Image (tube, rainbow, N blue to C red; front, side, top):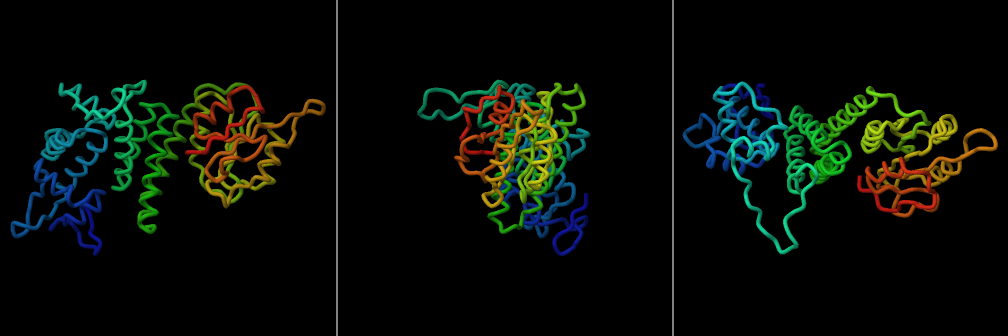
Length: 358
């Protein structure tokens, strides 16, 4: 793909500068110079023997380098693969999920580097899939860097690989949410200059969650019961966390009715009375949208046939609600806890009051 500089100059002939390329890839100019010095990933042409001008082929090589390092491949091995791809020795790079550090070491027979031992009880605990917290942190960084580069294929591929490797709940809590927060902090710190990065990440996370939901809902019909109702409170437009819960419930064959963003109070009350949900999840991202009177009203709303009326459990999700919403309202702290409260037997004496993290 031909790049164009900020002044509209085509890069096909003269090439782009190191500063422009660094901004395009989401890395620092120092990183590009380091890759040139250490691994020979420098530009093919230097003006006057000093100034770097990166050609489209050079850019493609560095894009491949960024993809591979974001997926966890050690820089030296990623550089070799990127140069081979640029030289035409391979038609295309492997799928990102096969570029993880574990796969690369198995293929090369290389040993894992020894971690520096800190004062503590023992080695870093591993998860069921053999990964450590450092591995998950690397996945988050790779995902955020791909978004900063506006590399949509890499973002989608990394998200798909995370769900496949860890399962939806863990991928959401330990990969997607930290990456979204990292991108959000970058956006806030830059004075709205990186809104396109945040939008790209959010769109692909939403697409990934929808794909999980559609796949789960299309296999077997859910168990025969009233659906759990998911909705954002009036004025609230942030739906990603509800989308994650929607997909996770579908995986567990729990019927779910997703109403989405900014649902009016009258519509929420009407939906509760019409479908009789065993649980209602209300999402509020900020204190300005949290509506405790509405939540209490829904918790007190009775539905069902005369003489056997009952009420829905109301779960308050999101940081807008605060830590102690009051009696009769459940306060899950994260996706896994929300799933437990929704699928557990109805026990209104135990309300979760942990602060929301996602």
